[in-house]
Image (cartoon, rainbow, N blue to C red):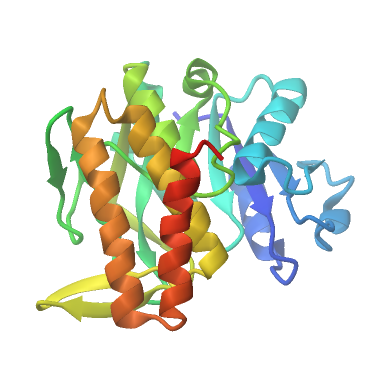
Length: 296
């Protein structure tokens, strides 16, 4: 049975045109919550005002991406309390696989299960052509699944874009953490789902194209890796969020604290090997760590 679905689409980049994605979502979803998160207002938002299925939420980047999600969920609680599931969509995500994804029997069963938080398709980065690598985390151990795998797997982390969440799970987990703004908002939410006894899954038989930053592919000791390509200012945000979450969850999940430390080193390596403005980006990343330690 297909879930009663609402989509939350967050717009930020003024040059992005969400028309095609929104039209596709209106076919699959009962409601589309279109969050205008551009600080000066997104030009596309006005074009959808008054549409029967589209509700425009003017957030203007208050609380960053987390704030946009929270504003949309509050509005959805007011206007569409009957919907059973929510799919989060970034403005650059390919939504063409959503109908097929939802029709898969294994996905449907999981989305009906009371102990499921969310199910998501796998994603492949547009710039590097590399698939996401998923992690299974326990308190003391990390297990990295292969990039090119098949089937449905229980994992610890999924990105928010194209993930389908049970409304009851969203209510149980609570609001997104606006301290984080943009970076690792989904990491935090998945950890909170785990602490609430809820599971997240990835269906590796379905994938969608997605862009995170301006990633660049490189090799280190013969291993293919990805550099994020983010600006120095964004690196500072990444460093801060990584350190905040490592500190927040490190005692309950020591393996996660080790993952945060390794991610900072991985980010640093990618900048040094594959990116320009190396000094500015590396110092930005580690200034973010210092910000977190100082409580900023």
